[in-house]
Image 1: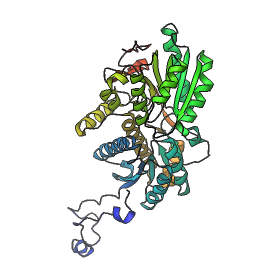
Image 2: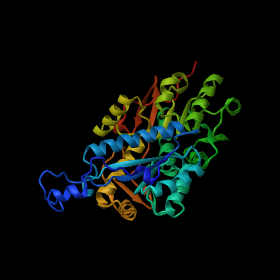
Image 3: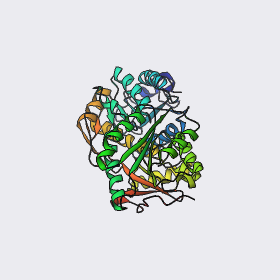
Length: 413
């Protein structure tokens, strides 16, 4: 749980008293030997699901935020604010939109200059709305639902691409893969969670796939959480798709992939767009047979960049998976730090105005120039990954791919 503002106030036990300062020579300005006072930290609110069904995503993002703050502080903090350090105030949304919204009240009371979060479209819809009441800029790390930017809220800045842009690129890449392989895939089944995230994705896929000559033979929705996918796997067996496109959160994705493996469906591939588990190191490592050759369209960093390599080393040192939750949260913090630097102010209005008008420097993500147009980072893009023998490989874009794609999926035995 987050702390209130009084809990966060820190007073040095070694502070120089006014009497002692006067004894040293009046106000102390220019007095030899006196260290310059450290400016007050800039508080950043971090909201996400640290408990509940989305705990993995929330705790991974928390790690990315913490590592980014540590690196920024070690490099001298926010220079335009006299080296002020970032102080992150964490708030647990408990995997529930209503709790996430309530936590914004506490973050506002703690005096945060900006909020980052919240790893889920449903939670982020609630937290951004709540933050708007206080005039707090909210940088969305992961939240693909189109509704996030359709409400006219001036405080919302989505760092990653939304579902529309991501589906367009994902479908184009699937079409290219299929054509290069001789068009083995013709029939598609869509399986999605029934919240704003999955439902929005399924609707967009239904509009786009026929345009590239692919027939949708089945669309199946399910709640989150969902613990048994046997019935859905049997429905898919009857539908006989060539390829399955799942859109789920991590726990459901893993259970679904395992159910497909257990039922030994004869398919030519599993290709997801924001599949939840398809670009997850834990899934790739712990469920190698079920994960093998799954392709995902998702967030991922550019592994060539020195800061990406530094992040990977930090994660390895503390035993944290380098997941896309970590990557995107880290990149979001880089943008927030740059906004504070350019604003030269910790005031919410100034930070929000800077986020709305400025162009931001490079992050670990494979993005073009970062600029928020009507709240959306116009330089954001997703990539394609594929799981190969327990390792997540990048297969597109070619300029930083680590492997060539295997498509269609070889027969499973």
